[in-house]
Amino acid sequence: MSQTKNTIKKRVAVFFGGRSPEHDVSVVSGLQALSAIDQSKYAPFPVYIAPDGEWLVGDLLRERASYMLDTNAMKQVTAVTIDVRADRKGVLIPKKTGMFGSAKPVEFDVALPVFHGLIGEDGNIQGLFELANIPYTGMRTKASSILMDKVATKHYMQALDIPYLPYAALKRPDEGYLIPEEKLEAVLKPLGYPCILKPSHLGSSIGVAKVRDAKEAKACLPAIFEYDPVAIAEPFVENLVEYNVAVAKCFDGKTILTSAIERPKAKDELLDFKQKYLSGGGTKGEKGGGTKTPGQSSEGMLSLTREINPELPRKTDSDIRTWATRLFDALDGAGAPRIDFIGNAKTGQVWMNEVNPCPGSLGYFLWEAASPPHLFTDFLSALIEEAFAENRKLALPRDPVPRDARLFKRPL
Image (cartoon, rainbow, N blue to C red; front, top):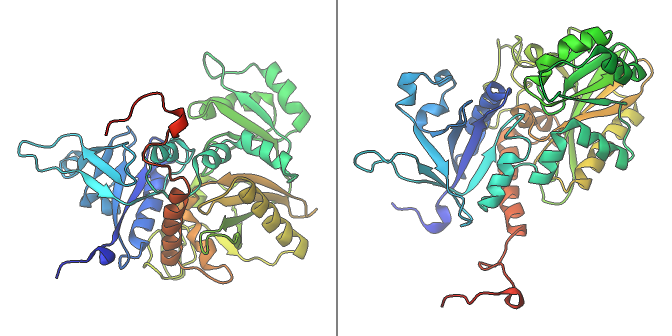
């Protein structure tokens, strides 16, 4: 029996990978989202962007075991590019149609980008979708760009009267990666030692270092400058504790909600990339992590050891939620960014640290533990429907030039 117009499922293109140091984490998050989308409502398929920037489609890309793609795997996928005509629907055009024209354009109704870091989470892909008039999930172009820049985010925190740590921005030299020690000393000494260095535009704890003096800072900066033109320095917080919370209004389209709060448990002073994504644990009774049944509640983004809904002083809980909501609202927030805080466990001081426009695993575990809970599948459905609503807000006439501003005669 053929489908009627009302029963045809919306096609969801799940984008992941990308030209980012966080490429591999994005693949994991993207495949999680792909498997959790409600297939009674939507028809999802993967669009993988390789580290070299090649866009690929194919059923092979649904399986985690396929990554990274070898020569044989590359023969089973199709390289595509995106059609940027503003037809309010996405179209992926095969770069090669084959001898018999077998490769056809791939249409989709909405994009679900699951990128982490550079050239994906930072507003670049969002701007492309805006240009092509394609509905997409998550933070809009402006917010994505601001929030992936830790220095720009600090300016917003200041304007919104949200507490944050003092900082210094260190720009990559025009030539080479080395900054003289005396210059570093002048910048870092006012912050106090030890201090923390990290890339201004990356996440997943990549490139984060604790340094005790300018000499150590000079040695650590080249590793940051290899991937990011700006490093940010902050004082090291004693008795370090972290709190993360997600924010969204996609569930009813107007009410800003905050998720459960998580308190990551770090084995060391700093929670590094391997602790976040590669350690053992996952859900109860399992080894590792990263897989789940759509709609099934779970406890982890891959295998991070965390405490969900920790017992907090009432003021701390209220401050975290209030400040997160204030920032989200000021940026006309969409999607479900995760906002990270840092604190001193002994003094009780808390500061907003940074924002993840597209958090690892989309932060679904925070919504599953929220009150009321929202399971991953329902959460994704809410994000997808919000994407259509956000796209409708930007609707323009087919000819966007007002009649009084037209300088050229329109064809009949």
